[in-house]
Image (cartoon, rainbow, N blue to C red):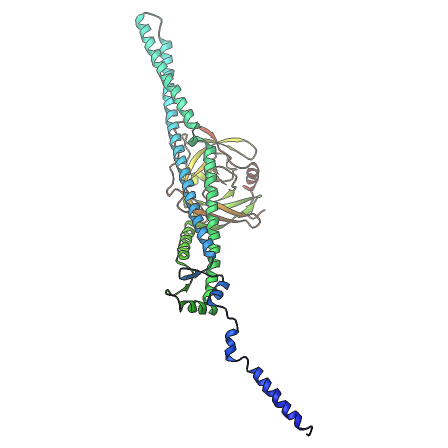
Length: 418
């Protein structure tokens, strides 16, 4: 046999084997290749079946956050109602105290007049003695009424409604609950946005579409991709909560070492005020009070304010009908009006305004974000408290000593000077 005939037969065998390998496995062998089931495909995407809907597990967390949000809102409303009731009781108590003080003034005058009549009686007969006894009885009766009023006044002033510390605690609770509610709204929005983004991606995933279609071929109810109806309800809850939360960014400007913010009084007069969350009452000079149409009277309560040099000043407490900062308007703001001649005192925005808001303040940039939950504050201006007798009280903190010192210096500093 010649050597030339061998290679030809070998090449034919090699070509045949190569063609078989290139053709792949026989059709009978394809069933042996593992394929992901529709359930595995959906599970790999994190989906689970609830009824006929495939949903993401994050919906359970969103449901939990939604329930917590409703509970926080109820707690906030309850605290706000409690605060409003205590403030109403305090206002009623103050009105009663003023009325009793006025009655004491009348009784004191009566006792003085009776004392004069008793002293003016000459010594004498039984008729004069009877007249004297009658006057003494009247005087004793007036004294008893006078002392009874004093006891009632002390009871009213020492009641929980008349205790400034109790009102401060309630206001602190409202502030904490407001902050917790606003933070819960923000957290829920973040979770909802992330879930919606995931559902959008899954809706365009061909493997998910095919898997759900394959499951539907053997299911009585056609399955679908979430979100679930409960998720849609939670979104509506979130949107209502977001509508109740008003937020606005306000720019502060720094001058003389303190921050100032523009405030609008009664919708007309705009003035810069020192921004100090540590202060108690909002404080304004008498010139500004006159400009916005407020004139303190002798029956307005007296509050003791402390100036930058430590001097105690008697100011009159009034109610400013409306004050606006940024987009927010507050009705019935309690304020202390400094006496005439104290024009060097800078206007100060205090807690009587701040207490309605939650603040996020960045001193480095002077950026202030104000947030308020609508429906918790009085809708109409409160009437100024009136008194038939001057009473004295001490404001909880008319201003922090350091801020007051810087504000006094800044009052005469030109704009733009830091």
